[in-house]
Image (cartoon, rainbow, N blue to C red; front, side, top):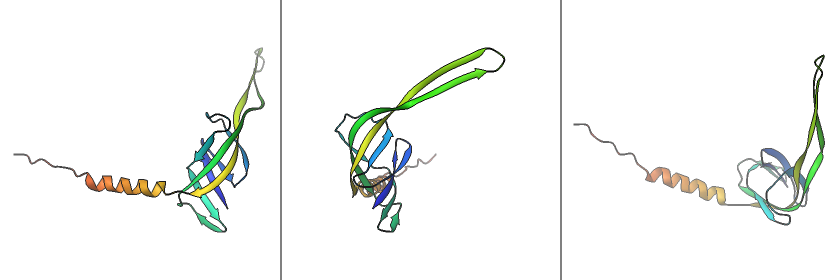
Length: 125
């Protein structure tokens, strides 16, 4: 069983007990994190895009990637600029992939709000 998950704007294929490097998360090391933005679920050949799931994970560490060098040059002008940065990321271990009923209840609540709110019209004299 695997799922495609959107984590901070990037898509990852996740399975149970897998280690991922995701964009930096603001939680502490050892904290449990839930990802609820599941785009696709494959359960033994049954592919579903609408099944509600939550993926639970544990933060293992926060690290920096290798240095990216940025070099700017304008030819025949004598202009050279060298710069760079290290992109932070978080190492996460996937603990569990489980079905959730949160999306179903949210849809029911949204439908109830739509049906209860009625527009009132005023008659002009």
